[in-house]
Amino acid sequence: MPKIIHYPLSIFHCFMNLTNWELIKGNRNFRNLLAGQYVSELGNWFNFIAGQGIVRSVTGGAVEPLVIFLICRTLPWALLMPFAGTLADRISRWKLMLITDIIRIFLALSFIFVRSSEDLWIIYVGSVLMSAAASLFDGAKSAVTPNLVGKEGLLSGTALMFSSRFLLMALGNALGGIAVTFLSYEVAFVINSLSFLVSAYTIWLIPEKETEKEEKDLEAKAAEVSSEVEEKLLSAYTRIRKSYRNGLAVVLVARNACGGCFGSIPPQMQAEIRTKKKIMTCEHCGRIFAGVDDSAITLSEEEIA
Ligand SMILES: [Zn+2]
Image (tube, rainbow, N blue to C red):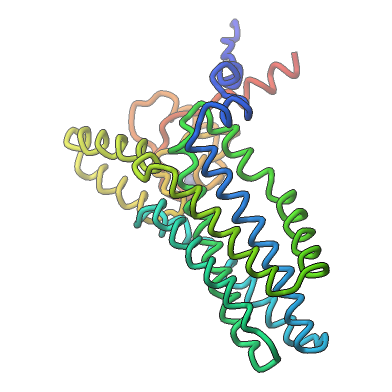
């Protein structure tokens, strides 16, 4: 029996995807988001180094306060990260980014008042809030990116957003180190505060409605078709949408796994999903299957041939 060849989806994708440069050049809103994110992340690392420096300097290099500082700096981030996306779904992401930037303008300035070990609480409290703000900013930014870049810019957009992370970390640490060494702590914290001001400005330049555009359109469409869907299915769909962190209720099977929870899906079931005769759900997570994505499988067949 002749084998039916499915072309890998990626072949078609490469004609539709914008390159990094095309995206930066052609999309002003994304350019502003990217600038805001770069500056604010640089500011974050800058503050991390300057903060450590001042803790050392007022305590004479004691280890304990430094450890407390590091915990204040990292724990809120780690704890809040899972909820940042959800919160970004509830309130305007644009406002969330703007507010967290503005808060950090003042938090960075508050570090100036740390003069002795008695003032260390300022830096502890400030760092907890700074870390929480950074986490929320990050969640909102990730949620906004797809709306700003559209389908054809998603690959480049995500790459530009996240591949720069370690470069910005290195650069921010270096700049923080230079400022602390050659200038004073006060100047370092003022520069830091200004970096959040710049970031807030670039975010403010993006029209708020652009950050939610695609989603609002899709929500309207969903409301339109929901009247035609069986009530039992619809309530299951809504329940799944709400209970999972990534908000995906309908997924594809890819590489023999559920696209939502990555639990393995037996071939028998995949065959049944392909027929599309009835609605199939994942036995691990309950998500609804829309079909089987063959692009991954076909690619490996081609590699063999
Ligand atoms: Zn699943």
